Image (cartoon, rainbow, N blue to C red):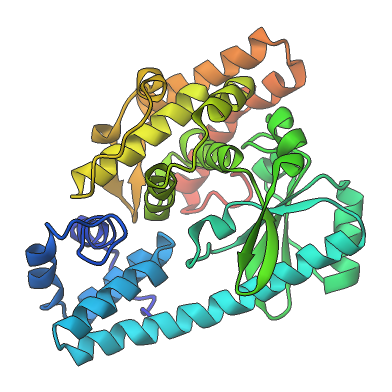
Length: 371
């Protein structure tokens, strides 16, 4: 695994990783047009640069997919040394994922046995990769969740930040599981403002089978909206997995756009959903992948596109001013027009929370306890 003392990955590493996943000859989207560029760059990677690339792939939740392509290309080129680098990274990551998936399956089984509704959100969207924490949603009461996690798994819950309290979520630590288990209880959104989406989520879930295990995961429309809430209304950055995962849904024609628009309008985030999808498709095309078709209703509703996205600090950043601020204003305005007073009060706290987090980060280098 990459050493923690590595210098941060450069924009060149992100460019290379994007081409590898989106336009390389072995990627799901690739046309082979980038083969010469990738061969020339990858075949001269030294170990430090490779470790930077692997670290970037890990933080963007594409390590398995990226290293599988890299290893196959190295084997085709007869480069056993670099293929072995990728194989070691894959072995370590797959072992981590295998352990995490078994724990998630155990938690899902425990909730089912106690007749509490539960769905796995976000984490399994990246399969065969997995996120850095394990996200779940339940309709159970907070008291029932805390009791079940402590009684069945001897789980300890972590200190809750201001944002955690507003969002009505808890983070748990379980012995033997390196990742935190994050459980959203009855609400979604950064300030817990999304009650309508949350209330219908479990009824709309579908079954996903992974490694011989069955999980309940959100419907495709709900999956996209949860990603949008996280990327366009909270963190203001994309991981590369968001691009690859969502582009795959578009390419495979898995999105019911009428259902998505209806649900997103009800949640007050249709402009954000449309913008998110346009950014995804723009980024794929900009990095050598195919032109993915979106309905006119989506492109018309989008507020901006991929040309506004930029790389900084390991991720693809969404500009906050004025682009994201306008999306937030649109969401808040919709909530106010529907007279959802509690949700609008929660959502109105978001700028203050973000400001406090920014000040805390500037003063201490961390927004822990706030965001």
